[in-house]
Image (cartoon, rainbow, N blue to C red):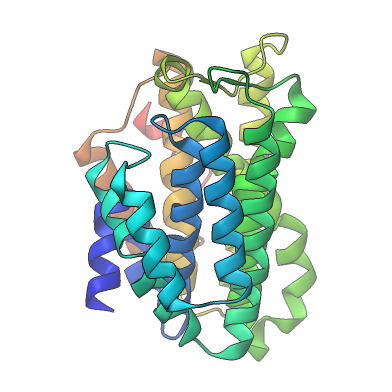
Length: 307
């Protein structure tokens, strides 16, 4: 786990913050799944590779998830890092260490491995359909709000569905609320993704990724993100009320709290606006205090308090 958590810290700030909150074996399962999704994201986001190579990498990645072969993964890792798809050193390191991530994936409990493999493959294949739509320069343009939502489902909604399936493994106390969690899982992921898209819209456009359709008023996207994050709050409260382990509740509450506060900030100040380190620390403390006191996490006013 030490090597995997090092990769996690170098490829994600938010998930490196909240994955360690999870109880085992979910912590290891989510660490491995995050790194696999991040590999697929790296191919989708690659700015240094031509379209054909990005599609080829996604197809090969799907095959090694469906039929894991560590030796084959080593050969692919050498190919992928010879001319890296991105300049980000953490992502390049992750591609180099893909065989190690695959070994960890194969070592998981069969039921967890099946859940993760199914959802990673669905996302990687879905990413391929969007990458294939890019123009000659690799630019991706989404057509309308429905197209944006389909993209968010592929890259984040499926992740929400996978996480829910992992949370339910071996936790009989959550069976009564399975339907409530599953009904909200894709919207949870969509809300986080829309917040990221709104925050990063200027920098994404500079790299040829225009996720905000030109014909859609930005206010409609903010409204959808707020609605989705409201569903994410409900999801977290369902977990808390059902007696889920503290770490499971905290894992879900923290990104929602950060996303809600970020959305307020971006709507007020525009793309690129971010929370300060002190504000992040304050939100983490607020979640922990609510859990300590047995109060509902994610109070209605905690996002606006940072605006």
